[in-house]
Length: 562
Image 1 (cartoon, helix red, strand yellow):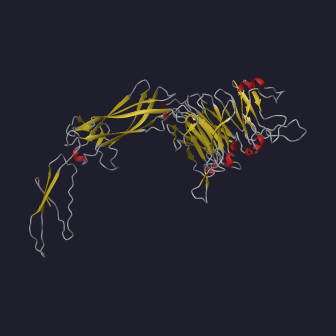
Image 2: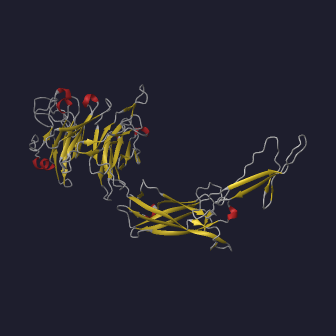
């Protein structure tokens, strides 16, 4: 924990005190701790480290060593400092608070043109050179003539390796940085926040919405062009905080949380969760966390600071800690276990012969054509109980609009939809349940050509989980919770059940001549013929001239007479 505004009164005969900053380091569940103030010395002045504000930003190497940002050193050129936690603990002495660590490393003073750059405003650790040794990343939000930049710095000698520069002046590019392997290629990627970025839809009215840049590493020293995420709320400060979350939804890709501390209703603040995939981050957030404290004299700043990838409740899923400085609160969001369900619909048979009436309806002396709808499912997921219960809904002939005749009904319920539950055990590869469905009599419907859509919707029955679980599992967000299959009615159309008719039509009036001025009745004799496969739902359209009046149709078994 750090206090970047910690003041130190130097040994000079002066009433002034300088904000050198300090941090407290603890190990082994606070069994040992020590103060670490690397900028505290006997000559603390603005041209030196008097305004260092050490601890303004902080991160750790994977070996546990500390990275500290001090953006106020050397007339606010800024600097980064690294030290071993073991050295800090071993060498701490309350009586010798100016003692320097032998293996401590600090970036030094630069030419005056680097004044007011704020190096160390943000820091992170990652591996970018291919040597398996981590480098550090430092944000310099007022560098490069206020365009801002982010530097990759060698951890051994603190030399500068590579820079990424912002695209808009005063956007505060580098305000925050984070490192994560977003696309699971084994290479660390860099995320950079620019919370003051202005979107210029119209040059006269730019909107401050903030941006986050994702640089995917392709190989050592080589990064793709940035993927850009843009905030949607004016003055929301999207990108003020970014954190690596770990794999929330257990899909093999790391996820990211981004803070917008002044967005939302009453500027309560928001945190947006973005899921990783093979090509970066999904552009739409999978979840938005909203602050609970309304803005008073000071906004709550929910999302101003973030910390992820810590399993607070030990359920094998990473949790998220959100800071709200204006409310003096920190909120812990515990990740819910994710259940991935593999559900199937199996129809037997898929093509139903309406003449094959082998099922007798209960309570009726009536034989009907029927088929079986089998619902099968299994599941997987980390830290899930050995048994789950799914709530399901089966809909028959679901493409038919409300009020239309449903061609199939459930055998036992005489309805076109049915709700049910199914218990799935982890040990079983697939758990199935059968439903018998019958086809209505052909006199009750006309449509024999369109497929019979059978749709399954399912959800988790949360009441089946133990009451002791305060964080209950949820279905995989990126997986559909519905399955659709199609059955077909057997028609006289060959083995493929696809009808290719060959319709022929002849028409002849019963009179050759009409006498003008008299009332003439004309009968048009129409003879249709089909030389191909069955023609279902065929229609005859006759356009009558405006001078004639239509009277009716006379039918017989051989011809239709109009």
